[in-house]
Every structure is written in C-alpha cells, then in structure tokens.
Image 1: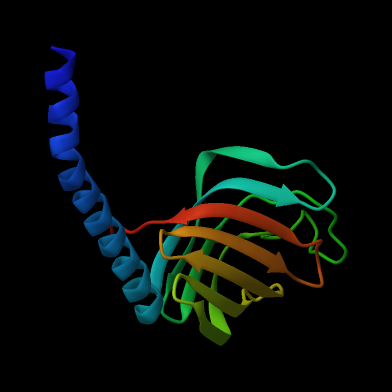
Image 2: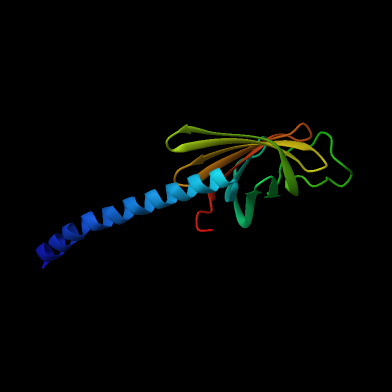
Length: 157
C-alpha cells in the first residue's frame, strides 16, 4: 500500500512543479505589468520604526499608486520634528507624485523612488519589489524620522 502511495506521489510531482512554475510566471508578469502601468497596491504586514522594535500589523494598511496619485494608509511611530498642531496627516493621506524614477535592478527586482507631495510635507517613498510581489517601502521626510514597511503587492487586482 505504501508503495502505491509513493508511486502516485511521484507521478503527480512533475505536474505540481509545472503548476507552481506557471503560477510564478503569472505573478511575475502581473508585478511587471502593474509597475509599468503605475497602478498597484502594496498591502503591508510589518513596520520598522527607527526608535522602536519591528511590529506586525493586524489592520489592513496599504500604499496604492494610481498613476500620478497615491493613497498612503500607513501607521507611523517615531519622532516628529516639524508637524502641524495635532500631529497632521502623518502617513495617512492622498497625494500626488511630483517626481518618479523606476528601474529594473535585475530580472527579479524593481526599484521605484517616488517623491510625493501631500500639501503638508514632501515625502520620498523608496520601494523595492520582487517578481513574487514581496515589497519593502522606505519613507523619508524632513518633518519626521524615517520608517520602513514590509508587504506584498496585490497581484489579484
């Protein structure tokens, strides 16, 4: 009986590998297309503030690019240097891209640098995305300490 199970497992293994390879190719193509179209969403799952330990995020936070517009719905922890009374928008805003640089660093990695204006501050979002959709977002501004996020590009959109 165990020999039959072993043989059936071996028989389906090439088919399973083929399906996995086809899925990887499909995801890589979706990542490429969304970056080229400048329409994508990165759902973040972890934040790395400078002065605090890394923290897993349980709420649905994200960063979305819609051509020349962005929606940043991200939490912030860190020191603020020059912000409006009450704390301002932090990283929860809609803004516009004023400068963009997108490069394919290697066949499986893209690097995007977006300068974003939200009428309160100028932010620089540096985004590394891999062909499997894994992404990191590093955010810099003069008004606050920098912070980083880890997430996954939504390729099912």
